[in-house]
Length: 137
Image 1 (spheres, rainbow, N blue to C red):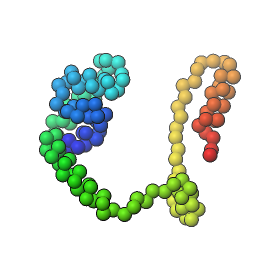
Image 2: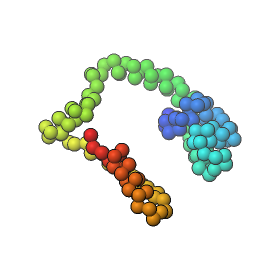
Image 3: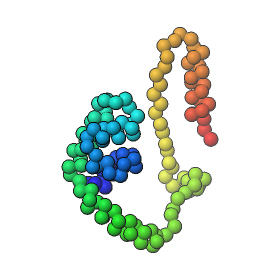
Image 4: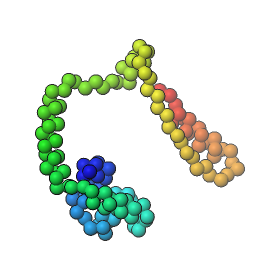
């Protein structure tokens, strides 16, 4: 559980490796630094509350000992592994042409458009989107 908390709250542990030992006010301060939100916001308070509740089920001291063992095991395993099978974009295209499964990515853009009757504003926004985001390489 401690390892999962360290993974889920990695930014907190990057700033303070003993974040799990902090009292609630100091933890809130640390979360505020990471989130960049104004002091006293509910999201930071709920994040701290969740962190503290999860912490009750974790044994960070035991996890520290396991990390050392896992590090040694990881080194031994990685020495026996064959070379990585990473593909460049060109290799992926070739794989697709040879019957491989194509990689399709999509994204959603939500725009908050200004209230205006000037069509030039909308044309400028959508022209910029088309030129900078939607163009194909």
